[in-house]
Image (cartoon, rainbow, N blue to C red; front, side, top):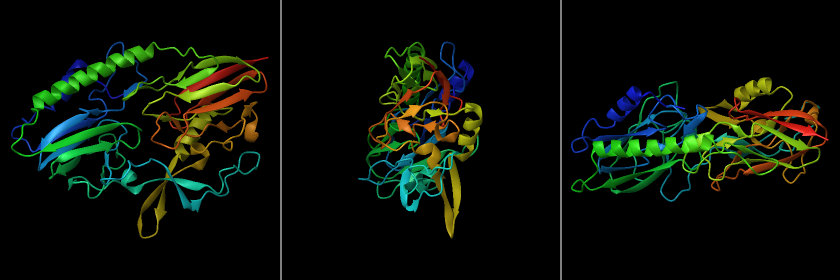
Length: 363
């Protein structure tokens, strides 16, 4: 998580109060938490998928500059259009030739290749004006310290924007006439501080939350509105042979995860990290950013009763496909599997390979 010591936190807040709102043409919003290290008592495997502040008011003709503090994007869709989806099946590019270790064809051959929309991946460039007539986006952040993304707002109105990478992560920009009052930068900074303190308290509570539903593993748990934990809870589950186990997301979470079983989760995690998304050159234009169907689609056809014994697909591969807890995406919220043989079976998240867990099965 991007957090800080008290000194760095103070510095981040100070950056929001200069210059004063009365004379400034630009206000700042931070995409991600405005700190770099977890304060005492806050779990280190946590994050805040939020914009700070979540809403901001400016005068017509002013700009907003987003500091990208994490793996986030800033996307304004065209007025009347739905928010962008991170992965859209491109039916003009059907998946083909993807086989498992046993040589069998995966069911998703013939389905559309999951592709990231260009406005999400590449953006439209910083400094453009937004009125709702056309979409604007920051693009995937480049490097450790991406440049701020600036948008000018010439027309009064209320504009909602999203981080397409994290479902449900949204903010608003309210634009009013030049003669109307807007909060000072000091007031904006105070709201950031209050928002952050509330979220940090939520993370502390999440850290102590246990999953009490039998035979269930939750990714997180997370909270609605942005606070998330990058862990599986419980990280070690015990169950009986042929007992259904539910692997699920927290409803309303802003994260996507997979539950992916493999004999060697460390090696499989490295492979997933390498293969998950690839820029594919396009003739006469920018590259297309394509997701690997092996990691995005479930390994078993929808509607199939899933059983696992550690040898599936010839090498012990079993994948839930991408799950999330939002009703705004087509991805499911849970995956159910039973285990036909005693043993200990390890799984990981193909999107966040450092997240690992295991299921111990007894007869």
